[in-house]
Image (tube, rainbow over all chains, first blue to last red; front, side, top):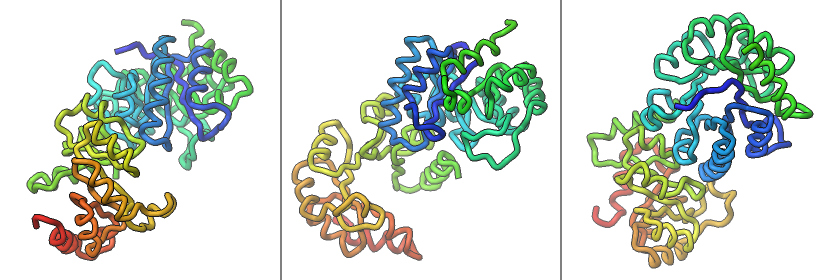
Length: 209
Length: 162
């Protein structure tokens, strides 16, 4: 299994229309992202595969990890390094049957119970959130906050990624919990200078190491 | 319900019958639910990719023209779905239905089984099989009937060999 870095950029073409998935991947790599997570809930399977193959190639050239959100089938045929599974997607154990040990399987958790469950099912990392108020998804439940994140980080042995509303203004708080990394969408994609924003996040994330 | 759970439930509940389970579009769901095959929409995964992961899957392709039908046969699909043959509310946005004449032409051009789909009801089955269709696919008729097994039996009566 490949090494899991700290800065994950999720491609999102719903909260913004300035950049395509591929353009986001390019920008993110330039800015120094470790992981690109390709997320699209609307495209047809062949469109998903075509785009995934392009991003996968780009990531390989740049030694960046490439994960596909939700769609195990798309990951299987596009040369991706793995998948990220939401709580409504294929369970980790089932995805493992198709992807094997060499691929990375990340899973979303919204509570301690879910985080422990996903870890026991064999997730290679846990995405926990949303930590702060976020606009990238319609969220009706309250943000989890830093204290809950700290509890998860202390309990879970696999890398934990914080997600939801994370940007330069609050990344230090997130880092203070000892979290492995952060998954970022809005603060980068809505930034006037996405590349610069990623660079800044990266600098903070890797400081004192 | 989560897609995979639903597929697994359907698949295991028909295991003792000769009914085949074909999953639309999703190779991953088909593999994990022990289905018999996949049906690929026009914008689906390629058969080459399907074959990398399963040699035994029945593979079907939804086509909307003679050209696509001939290509699908050449690519090695086991059957094709062609439609919509008749007017159906779900497909109105794609324009006029294909009609029986186009179905006839497709059936004369390919050797693999052709399933007619779109606006199929009991009365229309014979029209399709006379045009050369191997079988039919229906949604609405089965969703709207109060007795699905009776509707299936009525359908079966209309099909050759039954």
